[in-house]
Length: 417
Image (cartoon, rainbow, N blue to C red; front, side, top):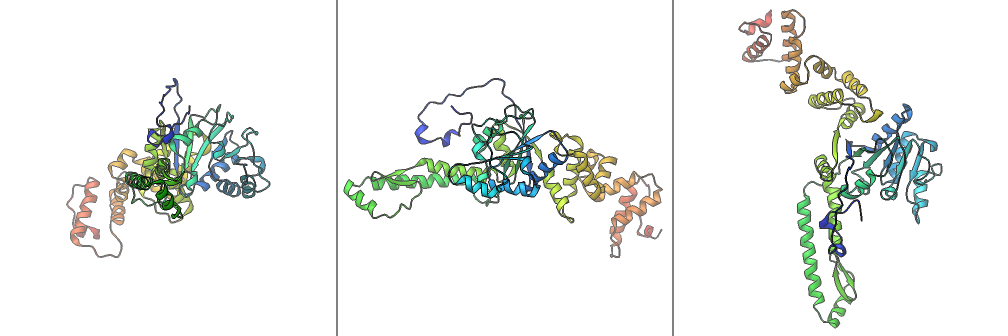
């Protein structure tokens, strides 16, 4: 029995003949995935760690990411002390020494049952069959598009992780921090599946042809082949065996690395298909741009929509202050705040987020003399020291008159006033 069955078409060949029974559990808890797309997952996690520690919040972070290098990087960047951190990763074989070296001796590898710390990291050794207890624990799942081993199969490992924290009051909320992969978009999942099935069929034909030889001829033939240059084929008891499980594994890996995590749409579709409710948070990407680059190019529409979202929603627990984020946008892009406060979302959308039209509308509403408004709108409309056709001057001036409700025919000579 498993709580996370693999998709039927990719089940091991040895198990496909077995009957499948599905248990319908009553009163299932709905899990809401808070999706945080970011180009820099490590930096994002660093910020969350520092917010919890610096603000004295009650929450403890339980971060599931299958990369000790990633964990070590976050510990270093966030300046986490050994007393603040618990790291649970593999200690089998050479992994113990290798992982401890990556973390540093001052950060000993712990056990799942060790006391909870403010910041808790877990690699795949804890993704399944591990019970964790923390009433104030918040689950973070990290999928780094640049590290394929951190990408999770939504139907299996992702679901397993969601149930690790048994008694948390936040167990119905999961924060998924991810970046999309940079694989080529030229090959679709359907194309890859078709190609794999073609290669598999060719392997079956090849094996059938070799296996049809007499025992003596087959033995001589196989002995002259240093290695089998055929995918999904191996030599076993002097015969060629086609392993369909390898083909299925290739398809599953392609689906995870090059399809599911390639775009936000694919990832969302896969999560929804597996019963999750998705709440998208894109502010991290926008805030990264305006925080890290003084001359960041962000569209007015993106900024305004983000400002509106931050104003009209509440954050999942107190790791980020929406008011602080709004203030950052307002300081750097004051027009966003002014448009939101004075025009409102519906009017800005009706103006199609066009900055010139928004400025014109704001000027119309100012309690100022009409002549002053005309001058300000002219200055905003016409480029300085640039020749302008008389017909365009008249047309733009007429627009200004019409916007201000002035019943007058515009003339180019009006500019002399």
